[in-house]
Image 1 (cartoon, rainbow, N blue to C red):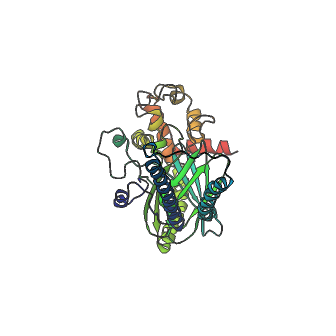
Image 2 (cartoon, rainbow, N blue to C red):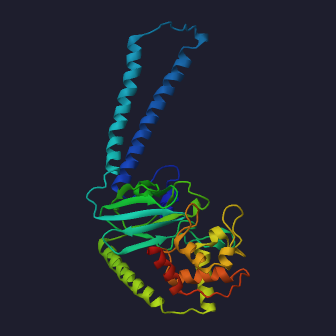
Length: 368
């Protein structure tokens, strides 16, 4: 039930599915209840017949067991009745499955890409794309501060969708298998690397809806939530236009960064913030990593010697490992700051002050 934002609704129905906020989720709920009732009726009939037979044909009443073999009539009956029941269950189930798998005639298409451990959303036909990461703080995760109401079900940048429009999802992955699951929409689709799976939804009510990655995808599987904000169409279009303007401004700002020069204090302050948000989960806040799993940065060769190699691995990642490419996830300034922070924190003390222009130069070399 924790996939829903409405905690009162979740508490009022703790032992059953909720009806959701889409036509398909309502169909799934109705199908679930239909099959549930059929199963209950079958159970009642079978157990009633069984207990009636036990009571009325017990040995102390002098009952004698009937002896028969290969009774064609009985075999036809016990084959025909389950067959009819299964057909009666299959018809509504098939209709619901067909509806769930029909993404045609969509008003909006969004690519959903999973990676360890975040989601990336890209709006087709619009210059809007961004990463969505867990917003619960590390001090809450480590029980150093009180947890908020939506602990582990909150993100920095939610997916924003229009109400009443058909939205098509193209779901894939950059590394391992993930699964994009929002219970209120009755959408649960695996994100497989190298493949694209389709899903769709049409939300009937504005609101905030929550979900999670539903596939075991690594050590931080439980820290990969999904938050969707459903807005009326006019509000959604306003939001989308604002995001496109921000994208244009971000590109202009990136060009201006090439001429900027950070000092050590500014770099370390910003770098620590970026590191704690994006890197500390693997390499740990103290830079010592996890032995045998994630390498230490404290005193490591990559963080104390080869500057270009350090920039390259942060920007482009490392194939065959959990080290992701952060070149598209962070701004040039954030990349420069976090690399500089890693080279000076935890007594690394290289004195290197990394600038955005250095990061850009490594990016351009890779593109050639």
